[in-house]
Length: 268
Length: 251
Image 1 (cartoon, rainbow over the protein chains, first blue to last red):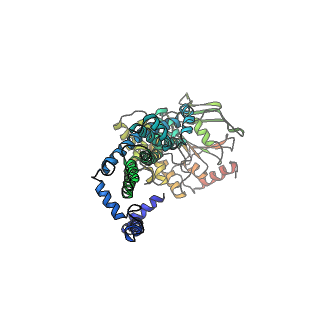
Image 2 (cartoon, chains in turn red, yellow):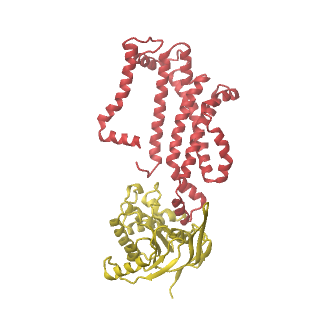
Image 3 (cartoon, rainbow over the protein chains, first blue to last red):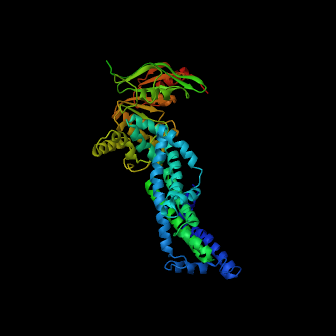
């Protein structure tokens, strides 16, 4: 709701409000520059200025030094692992949540197990996964899968449970079968929440993959950051953090667009 | 000899809740003839909605039985359509999507159901709004969609459960007028629930006065006033006074 209001303000008063939004980022960068490059309060080996980081970032796009991979290679690797686990989480988690909410027996069967697994954060699985699958792709895909799986199940479950009785009555008086009521009434009802779950899961996947790479890996953005820490290159660390932030925001933005296309009839 | 479409015989409904047994309907006998518009009229909290749900087959009677067109009602079916009080439209479907929902559920071809849906959309006066989502419509327009949706499934009987209860007074008058226009054009058997005496008198062929919980038939009035009816005609006001005096007073 608040986001809608902000969007609404932006539309009405375009330029003025865009300026306010840009201001926070600009101010942050300015203060950063001031304490580092500007006033020289920090050294390049503790906190390099934004100008230094930008230079490193651009150079890192094509230069594999000092960690053995270019920025694009690391991003590609992180994205590939994160997306594999994420898609598995969505594809398995969402239908499971829907079936749990619709069929009592599925709920009775799956609920206790799910309730036990739910409170364990995605990254808490990493040590076990490393022992089981090593530090390669598999351990991380499974970890990301678990992180994405939980919000997908939760949100689709809650979404289906929001189906109104009166809508089901209408379906019944129109002679809809139980399956039709699920697919044509309950699932459309749940869509806004399902999409929220899918979005939350994306954020969880992205943070989890970076965390997993920090702990153990041979490539990826988290690996790059970890390597840079070992050789005192905070500029590379910050460049990596910027890439993580930008890609996370970009992914969320793409999903928001998809969400608007999929979810219809809800107040825009 | 008139054709009896709905026959309720000794219908009772009892709910067993955590706080004990509640009798909601007590031995209701009611027959509705073909193309008759019967209004169930009674105070707020009594079991009129439950009676509708029992007749529609959404709830089972704990005593007695309901038959529609000679068949015993055991579960909901497309021969009985319902228009609900609050908007029961599917918010994710357009006006067209909502209206064609019934025929679509029964697997009627796209061309045929579109034609039929368009006919009823035109009938309720919503041409031009086929592709609008319900969230963009006013309360009166939403109820028009609800009526068109019920009509489009071509049921034998239609139940209307206080369909205008949430509308403002002005829109409510307009919708009563509209319902009469639609019904004169496409006669159907309608059971209409309301707690508004003016609305009951304006619409009904027959008013069945219900008592408060547990609900049962108190008395009934055949209304022979010519249509369209005048809310302030002396006969209208006289009947209004008479029926109001019979109804249970509740808080």
